[in-house]
Image 1 (cartoon, rainbow, N blue to C red):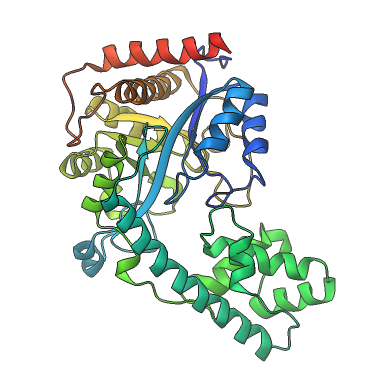
Image 2 (spheres, rainbow, N blue to C red):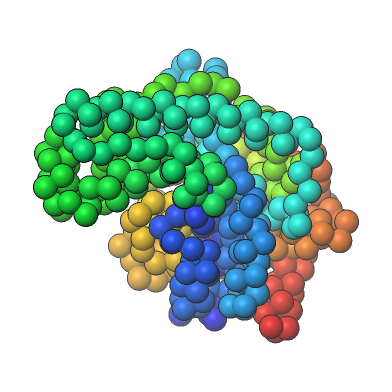
Length: 381
């Protein structure tokens, strides 16, 4: 289905319950995408590809082209020491990074498995400590709530507990008891009218400065170089998610689109991604146009990595439409990812080679291949 701008609607960045998602199931996610007329949808869970099989089945059933992605968190230790911000406005040196157009079925090599295993072990030790600190705090405040890490873990499809799972479980435990919920909200200064209570619980309890916060070990993160190699080993394209004005003040590395373009090229990233719902139209268009002019291909998505919800159609903050120029750039980006995904599957080079360097294939050629691949897929179903 095409939007009123004439280009198909795509969303290459959504999270599923295999990491954390607004949606309770992969099925409900894909069904909502189909209802909105999205033709290409990209799974983008943190550190796991376990949802690929189910995602593929649902996309096939709903006649949506499946795009395979992965998200990780890297830390540049030098920038961390200097206090330099990338696309995390609260944590210097931390960088959210994605891989797009990964091979499916996924064959993960031993090096990648060892890296992911290290990250998971470190992060889950931290989650256990957080649960313990939450229980201690609630006990001291006379709350009749006690969490069990193993129970939370068992409730997640991948067994990977994150802060949002803990906050969601706390809220689920008090939601059934109005008195307990009111008491907890008063203790933490939470207002039910100020947005998701679970997200506020996460901020008040688990984030930096919260009573249950546990400092993160550097071993719980990849280096930027490791992250890029994980994506390349998985057959994908390294992608940088742009925060832009998704925060009140532009971060150090995103102060201007020209600066960001230079930084991405230094890192060996030839593709960037925006989450339009968190960006104003004016800033979104400025950054997208400059990056594209500088040779950075651009895609878009919505994340849905919280309990906030909203449309799966990526639209700029406060608007109900995407203008034609932006829509074409995002469609081009989607087609190039689809072309890369297809070409790597048949053993050829795509947008980047196995070293992450741009291949000789032109963007026009890749767009044509990807557009044909998507349209052929949709026509067959």
